[in-house]
Structure formats: structure tokens, C-alpha cells
Amino acid sequence: MTDVAETARPSPKKPWFKRWWVWAIAVFLVIGVIGSVASGGSDGKSPAASKTAWAQSTDLDEPLDPSAVVISSSRPTVAISNKSLTTGTAVDVLAGLPVKREASATGYSRTADFGAAWLDVDGNNCDTRNDILHRDLTDAVQRGGCKILSGTLNDKYSGESIHFVRGAKTSALVQVDHIVALKNAWVTGAQQLTQAQRVSFANDPLNLIAVDAHSNEQKSSGDAATWLPANKSSRCEYVARQISVKATYGLWVTPAEKSAMMDILADCSGQMAESSTFTPPAPTPTPIEAPPAPAPPAPAPPAPLPAAPCPSRSPREMVPPHCATMARTLMPPTIRGRAHTMVASRISTSNEGSLESW
Image 1 (cartoon, rainbow, N blue to C red):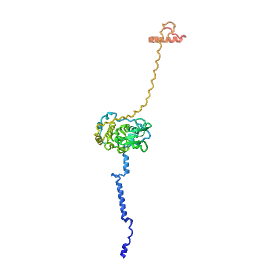
Image 2 (cartoon, rainbow, N blue to C red):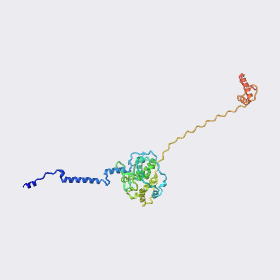
Image 3 (cartoon, rainbow, N blue to C red):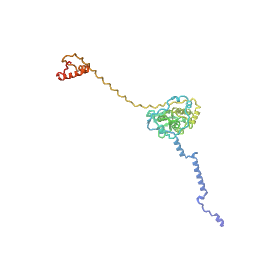
Image 4 (cartoon, helix red, strand yellow):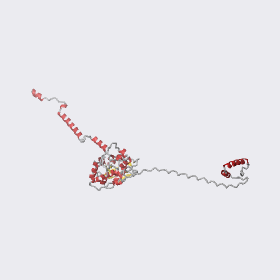
């Protein structure tokens, strides 16, 4: 009985850390945490870190909807004025482009190197973004001769139709893309351009197109080797525009970039290159005031009147002074001296001041 009673007696409770189910829950939680961290990405970066890296790598232009038109203080000019460089097929123009590796992007700054976005470079009192929206949107509604309030974009990158409405939360849905990205231009020759030429590059309509935000953000600063439009029907035109822009501004292509372009153009070898029609206004010359006309020359003094003829000598007759002077000049020196003495003596003693004959 004693053994039975002792066996039936409940054993004292174990401490919580010795209970098996506590450890089971702890192990389950640890596995869950590890799994959630691992699912954050194969590169080990957290979603927040990936988002930050993406934001830093984009080549977007701000502001998307400028509130005021900023007139460029520089006077941009295209780098190469020979339009024959973009005459012909895109294949032919591509064959003439230099092929080099990318230069270093150290020191690249969108605003410092290419000017602020978006400027009024062509002098029409409207910023470049609204100029491109006006060109690329159908049924565009405009206000004040510049601001595009609404319209429809037939997006060449995605192939979709996008209704655009200007607003704080909607303007960013349609963006203006640099077909040759600014950063890509910087590492393929734009560092050798002048500041004015880079401003021209950033605002040349040949290098700009209105697109959907997702495509623009996805492209970032990629070239043809790293990004192409999802809409395959627009790839030939897209690559041809890139080639035309690079030829116009004296840029080069990388080996991988050229290879990707040739692959695209293999299906459309007749695709023509395009020439830039962008002509920034020439500087307004400062008017130069004409120098005052020289004063007319002073009139010549009147000619002296001819001297009166010398009269024949007669006693006690007045002799004009010039005749006396002439007579003295023509006398021999010895006679002239004696005559001078005689004349002076007679003049001083004559009350009439006359000169007698010699």
C-alpha cells in the first residue's frame, strides 16, 4: 500500500525552463526569424537597403512638374553641326561611331554638368518638360501657353495608353526620359563637351521622349546592352535614336552596347537615323553705338589781297610801306645800310612821316 500510495502521488512541478514545450516554441520562433531574414533577398540586403540603392542609381530628372520657367543663363550649341553625320541608316551611322570602354563617372553631377531640370533653353517661355509633353501627348490641354494639364500618352516603351493629369500625385506617372541617359553620356564622351553643349544635350528634343514612370525608373542610366523597351515594336526606333544622339554630340559606344544595337537593327536594317532640329537661339548682340561723326574741317583762311602796285617815285610823295620794304630788300647790303640810316633820320624829323626819294 505504501508503495502504491507513493506511486500515485503527483510529482512536484518542473521549472519552466525544463519543460519541453517551452523549448519547442523557442526553436520555432528562431527558425521563423531566420527564414524571414533569408527571404529579404538573395544578395543579403534588406528591402529598405535595396530600395535606397535603387533610388540612388536612378537617372531621373527633378522637378517632374516645375512651377516656374527657368531661363538658361548659358547659350547652348550642338557639339557637331555637320548634319550629314546622321544622314543614312542607323546601321551606317553606328559603323562610324568610336568604340571605347566607359570612362569613370567620378564627380558626375546632373545639375552641375548638364544644368537644372527643366530649363527654357529654346527661349519660348516654356520649360523643356512641358514642351515634350505637348509634343508627345494627344488631346493635350494647355494652360497659359505652356503648362500641360491633361492628355493621353501612347507610351512607346510599354505599349500602353496612359491618361495624364497634372497634379501633385499624378504628374510623376508620366516622365520625360533621356533616350541616351545623362550619366551614360557622361561616361561615353560628354566630359569633353563644353557646359553649354551638355545643356543642349540635356534639352534636345531628339534625345527626349515622354514615357510611363515605371519604364523610366527601370531603365535608370542603362544603355542598349542593359535595358531595352518592353514593347519590342519600338526597339528599332529607340536604338536608332540613341545612335543619332551619340553621333550628333560626338559620343562613343561600348563594345557591348554596339553589339546589342547591331542585334536589334538586324531585324530592321532600313531604319533611318534622325537629325537634330534643335537650334538654340543665338545670343542677342549688344548694340554698339556708332562713333560720332568727325567735325567738319575749319574753313581755310581767306587769301590775302594782292598788294597795290608801287608808284613811281616823286619828291615828297608818300610811299606804301611794302614798297619801301621791297626796295630795301633789293638793295645791295652796303647801300641798304646807308639808306636805312637816311630813312630813319628823315622819318624822325618829318612831321608828315613821309619818305623822300633817295
